[in-house]
Length: 368
Image (cartoon, rainbow, N blue to C red):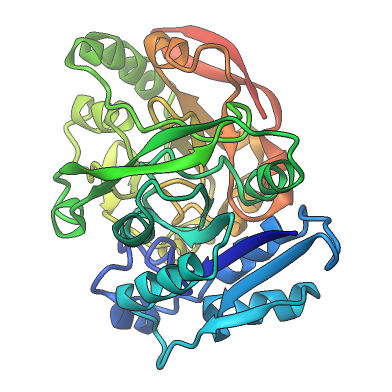
């Protein structure tokens, strides 16, 4: 029988919807702002795809919110190999749980978290055994993660049943969150993990927009600005393409956060989900977003402030997507992705959408 290890970082992603751009070192502030744990929910979504019986699989888990709670809810039998002493769980808990699973001879470890969790796993596991990341964090630059929790579960099932055997090295990347909150991007390579390789399941590493993109971004900015409606609130998502729009309008902007504009002026900066909804309650609103370079995520990666509740309120007709043609070409034909955690919100943009790629220039592109 195969042995699967499951580790959940229960606080991963909590800083996203409340506008903290991460949870490292700010758990208490995230909780004060009303953040709720979501990593367990995402781990549960992955486990639903794992249709193996107890005769085929042994599951090893960390206790409580680090895995056992999710397995109890999902109906899986398991054996505890580590009990965390407190909540919130610390990085040391992740590392200790991973070490215990290695000692038990697991075939693969699935872990739910973000880039910080991947760093903790890397410190202990390295390239000893394969792992699969279940995306649950705010910032997920590392290509050790599957595209969605569901795809993590599907790939896990294929690997455990021997239907996929190919593996590859994947980078463990992380960004300095203190710099990130000051709109400074400082990404560092921390090592490599071994992951099952199926391109249709795993995300790519995030690619920055090159400086040569600026002229194309300015054309996109002018096109969107010329169509802005009086008194309408515009929710501006993070990214260099949307930042160029703010620069074109000479408006205060937050590169890595979400801003709100009205009548070409910034009316709120670096807002949380609750602040966005408060503006939606005041009048007509539209959302302007750009996909992540290299990965192609529209929503659910680094912009969790734009929550399912926000998307469902806006509807497809009020969502404007912008991207340069080279950014779309960098996806080598792969569709764009949604991973908001709510299938109703994901379905709003599923199919083909219009993307502003230049001045009065529209490209139709598929959303998975």
